Length: 283
Ligand SMILES: NC(=O)c1ccc[n+]([C@@H]2O[C@H](COP(=O)([O-])OP(=O)(O)OC[C@H]3O[C@@H](n4cnc5c(N)ncnc54)[C@H](O)[C@@H]3O)[C@@H](O)[C@H]2O)c1
Image (cartoon, rainbow, N blue to C red; front, top):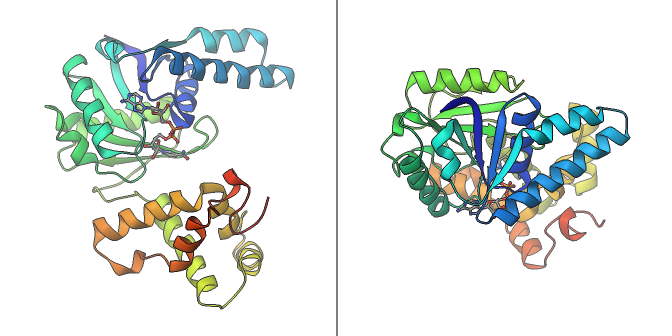
């Protein structure tokens, strides 16, 4: 088993970015999705992004080749047998994630740490699918993982202090400045605080206090936020934001996370945000 080989499971938006980050920091990264095609596709996207950086004079062609040379693609989880760390970044669905963790547990050496990039699902629920709950931990990257400095680390109920320590050191080797939560709670720090801020903004509009553009202007000029809450919800997606608030309401059994009906109405009308050209704003 190599300390410098990392398996990233899930070749989507985040998985590809995490694999690229690992390779940029000198690790060997294997990307694995449900088919080899999807993983190779992710590598091609990374290559395209790196080429843009070469064209813009940000990196040399030799640096591009060195990073790409450290990334390989797989269509199954077999490479876990050679990795000290696995980072799971598949769809945000607890049943899919539990299946992936159970399979990884059967392949990876007993000392391998299994980390999840989940946004708000239970770390303990994933850990329970394995025989190594002490080595299961959250390692939550921000989008895009190559740029954003933060990694949030969160233990499950049975995660050991040694695992937390190892993951913190690993995050630092990836050039990140990690924050470690003391206990498990849905959505960690940034997602939970931001979710509630965005929720409060929707309540202001739903109760007729102000227009979205005025709330955005107020938060930018009055609180120095780089983006207004409605610009941010449109970017995240109204459906993704609502799903997070529903998880918080359900898991924490606290009505203060409830979203206004306005959000349901907009989602039913297809106003999902920037990705479909309309949300609180038209694009
Ligand atoms: N998008 C973000 O801004 C963001 C930020 C932080 C964390 N996250 C979390 O990262 C995870 C991935 O999010 P994303 O935005 O990259 O999603 P995505 O939809 O872009 O990618 C998910 C990938 O998982 C793959 N997949 C599904 N089942 C699989 C399986 N059994 N084995 C291997 N691969 C499988 C899919 O084929 C897809 O390529 C989620 O848990 C999400 O909550 C997302």
